[in-house]
Length: 118
Image (cartoon, rainbow, N blue to C red; front, side, top):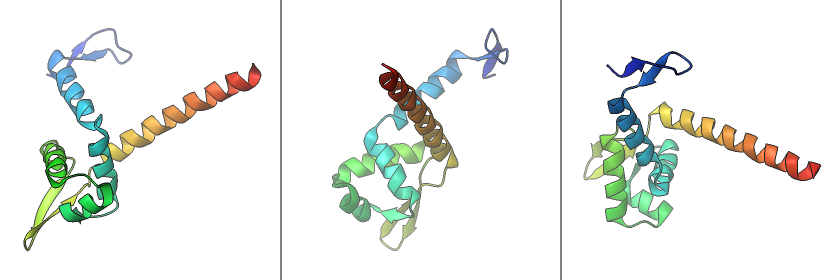
C-alpha cells in the first residue's frame, strides 16, 4: 500500500516507503547533467559520442548518468552495430519540467509586479 488515510487534501498521504521512492526520483532529476542529457535525448536518439560532442562531458561521466537514467526507466538503450543508441521517451519528465517552469514563471512575474509597485 502506497497511501494511508490522513489529513492531506485528498484524504490520503504517502507512506514512508513511497516518500522514499519519490525522494530518490527527485534526487535523480536534481543533477543538471542528467537533465541536460534528457533534454538532448528528447530531440532524438543519440549515441555517447554525440552526447560528448554536445555536452563536453567525459565518456565515463555520460555513461554513469545514462546508467542511472536507464535504471529509473527514463532512458532506454538499443544496440546498433557496435554503438549503443540512447532514447528518452518518458513523457513524465517533460510534464514535470513544464509544470516547474510554469511555477517559476509565475513566481518571477509576481516578484516583478512587487518591484514595479514599490
